[in-house]
Structures are given as C-alpha cells and as structure tokens.
Image 1 (cartoon, helix red, strand yellow):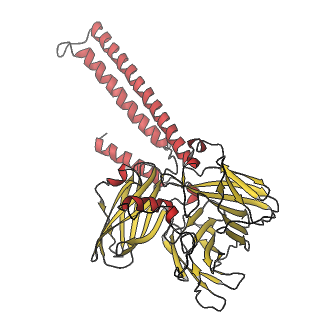
Image 2: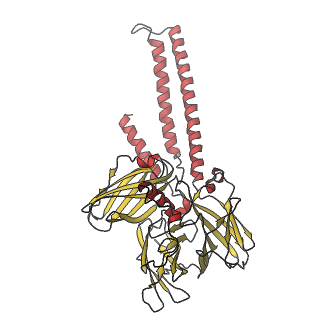
Image 3: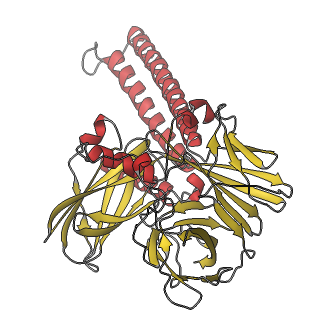
Length: 494
C-alpha cells in the first residue's frame, strides 16, 4: 500500500475515534473555563474549552466588548513556578469574518495541573496582557475501536512477515552466485535467519504490548485521580464533620496544603435531593485532625448531596462529592458568611423571577438557553417598591456568588462575576505578575464590606456556558443591607 494512502487511512480512523467518543463527566461535569475581565483598556470575555484527553488541544474564544481590538495572541504556561515566566511563542488568534469582536485560537495543553492562558491584546489603545487560570486534566481514557486495533495489528503483522522474509532471503541468497539455486546449507542459513528474526519480532511485539498496557493503566490511574474525589461526612450533634474519604486521591494529602479562597479553606454546599428544596452554603473550619467542622443551621430531615470546593497550593480547584442522610437538625449559631434556606421544589418550567420573604425581587434575564454556548447570565435586584436596590454590598469579596446544579446532579459549578476560575488561582497569578510591592494574598483581600465602601450596582452578570442539555437549578447569593440573601431559579437548557 502507498505510504501516503496508509497515513490518510490512519488519520481518518483516529479522527473518527475522537468524533464518536461519548462525553464523560469530570470536575462535576463543568470543566470548561469562563472568565470576564479587563486586559488594560480592553474588556474581554474568554472561554477555554478543555480537551477530554491530555495532551490535547483546547479551543479558546476571546470576545472583546467593542471593536477596538485588532489582534489577540495566546500561549500557555504553568500557573506557578519557574515555568510560569517562560511562555512559548504565542499563536495569533483568528478574527471572525462574521463577528469582528470574536477571536478564536487552538492551544495544546501538554501537562496536567494548574496552567494559565496568557493573552496578549493589541488595539487602538495600545497593548495589554491578561492571564486566565486553566485546570488541565484528562476527563476520560479514549478506548481504541476494535476495528482500528485489528487494522493496525494486521498491518504490523504484514510488516513483520515482510521483514522476516527479507532477512531470510538475504541470508539464503547473498552468498551464492547470481542465478544459482541455493543449496541445503544456504537454505538452512536462511531458515536460521528467519527464525532469529521471528524471535526478535515476537519480542518486539511482546514488549510493545506490555508498554502499551502499562502506559494505558498509568493513564487510567491519572484520569481517575482527577475525578471528583469522594467526601465522607458524619453528623455530630449540630455539627457536620467532613473529610476526604479513603481513596487514591486522599493519599496525595492534597487537603494538607490548601489555599484560602474568598477567605476560607473550604466552601461546603448542602443540597437536599431530589427536590432541591433546601440549600446551604457553609464554611467549615479545619480541626486539629485535618478534618473540617461545619456548624449546621436548622435542617429538615432528608438525603443531602454534599459538594466541597477547595483549592490546592498550586491553584488547582477540586470539588469533593458526598452525600448523607440527616434527621431533623435543631441547629445553632452559624458563621456570618454562611447562607441558604428553603425553596420550592425544582420545576421543569422556567423560573426566572424569585421574590424573597422581605419583598426583594430578583430577576434572571435570559433568552432561550443552549448547551455549550458561552453566555453572560444577567441578574437584577429590586426592592419591594420595584426600584433598583441601592444597598447591595460585597459578599466574600464579590458582587454575588452563583451555584449551578443540573437536576441529575451530573453538573455542579460555583461561579462569580469574574467567571469560573477560583479567586485563589487569580491571586497566585497576580502575585507572580506584580513587582512584589503591590502583590496581595487572599488573606489581604477584604471579605466583608468596610465602612464607607461604595454600594454595588443592582445589576450584575456572570460568564458561563451550560455543558449539556437538561433541567438546571441556579442559586444566586448576594449581600444586601448586611444580610445574605439566596434566590433560586429553574431553567431548561436545550
């Protein structure tokens, strides 16, 4: 077969394998990165579609708020360490011929862990840079289709048989005169050479298969490591004790070296299933034995799904997942930043307005929602008279927090007006980018409104893209007049 034709067949087969691979869930089903922020004078909305396998190609979309951006280039570095300061030659993004505000690029993610996407922007207001944290991890182990394996094995066997035949012929006939028939000695020499070549080929086959299987097992172990780690929980009086369950992940002792995110080492979310009618956002405190202790509010009995957000020392975000059956809990005093409450059961119809107990009206403004489409989720808050609320304050350093949950619990995402990247990872980038004098840690960042702090706008948005069609519930949390409020919305994503 012509070598070029063979390469075309293999390329087509590989493309077909990737195209028909079914999606997998990881990081609770929402692995892509959404970020909105300023690169100098340019306001950008960045989306990074993380590949299913590593190494793999990530798709990057950069949308500018206006048309004054003329060029965008992208590159990837480590988020921390020496490698973070040495970016490769950037790739120039392609400007859309239909939408001049949109630039697209493809970048290789070659390693696991905390990376950063470095954007360089050029326009009529000069040049600027932006860094976006990217959690790079494999979501699945793509299996080779049997037909492709059989084809490759047949081709390899044919090559091996051809090599054995060539070596045998060379040993048998290289030492006789042209046109002469090989004698018995020559034939034995040829058979010996063929036997030796066959043994070598068999050894190569064996070692190749052993290497392939060992590499596949190692890749599978790494892929499992980046699945949502299990969380164990036990009820002790009015407190919930949570910790990483015994697993391969827990042996890496990630929980021993965590970064504070929004002022806390852990954000714990409790959601009663199947109705999604009780929801709480708590902030457990670490105990001397390494577990976390959360004071519980009054809770009705039921089965609760648990999601625990933490960020490790490299800036990589993890969401631990567990569940627990709780009796009626009397509850007691909880932290000043803890919030939640009771809500109507999740409804298949769209629920875009929530009126809180004090008359506050919270609206989610959206058109038809489509999966795998980056968008801005826009919200507004009005007081009981219908006027825009004038007393909104920062909650944990942000205008608001949003938790997105799919009805089958395959998706959980905790996002903010800046996007899905954890604030701790953004602060790591800032510390590296700053000269040092202006670098701040999360501990330096005010988590509560300070006297004289300006009130926030009653309208805000959050960048996100629903990863799959289905029914979703959204919990929006914000601080108003010193009190933390939670509004709930339901939506069908097509």
